[in-house]
Length: 287
Image (cartoon, rainbow, N blue to C red; front, side, top):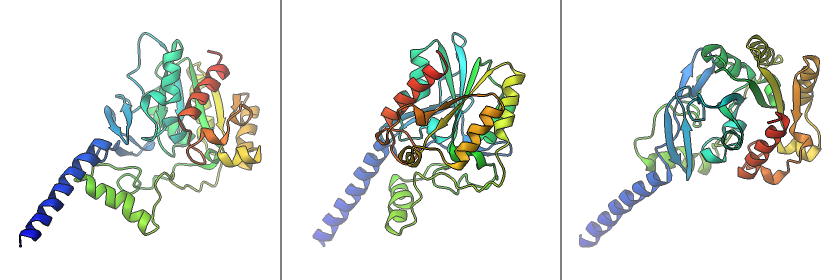
């Protein structure tokens, strides 16, 4: 009986210490999302925290940036998880943060995982263009057909939670261990969309930029597979043709020295990649 009591005490102690350690590491502290009838979903505004050793911050407009500054000219950085960085990227390691500190401009990071140009256009129609002088769309080849479908992902897809887990142990088991053990893991994957027409958001963003007299620049981000192939996919080529047809300034990352070691997976950049992206945009935008 004494042995059982001792084992029970050690087990409870292990659970308590583990809960504290997991929370310290960032469990139960994920950025939270809400659903939108206009742009599908977005992180709640005014969120900040630390998760897995990386700090995140979202301002009053759900941008992964500080609040819009009255002291600096502004550039809108528009994109998906590549620009957003997600929780694997610390706030200070983001290309937009680096550029905001290194130039006379504040780069407002308007982005969310798996957002396409039409999501971004809907966001700008809702919130405006923040008196920006320039806007740069960071997109990838697959964005040519990444159309909004308004599938209910918030609270259903593990990367888009609407509330925190009650216990860190539950999050560890439910979100990470169980899916991996039973082969159901989709951690780090974007939402899969199967658009059948070229994303209307490209035209919408250009129209918004022209209306507000904003310079519009398009940066075509290469995936690792495209770097290996040394060419964009057919969908990437469609984006290039759109830029030529509409006389939009195009920056092709494939031609600017990105290597496989700049990535943490097929599409997302690591810290070195974010620094390189910042340098590429600084030169491309002539800052």
